[in-house]
Length: 137
Image: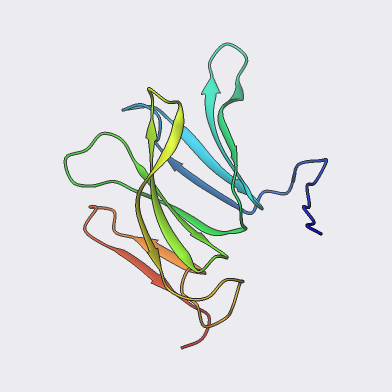
């Protein structure tokens, strides 16, 4: 017997919000983490509201997100720390209209454990480094 759990209604509580240019160069966008859903919004000048550009349900819980821009680039990467014990660097591909995984690093076992890094993310504004940390150790 195999059990599969699917929620009927999406999460509405926003856990993390970061600002950057994720889909195109020189655009103002907001990336939002809602539990296990990653969304990108762009302001619409005609209605003065945020317009949904991209939404993706992720298999896992997003612990932390941070924008990251390498030197000389016009677009931002998105760094995601999840409950799977991994940190993933994502880049938005405009041809496929989705985030693609640039790099993935595993730091610990699954679950939101206090000793597994990924709870705290910090990025250098000049694009030189990403620092991750855990609650303990």
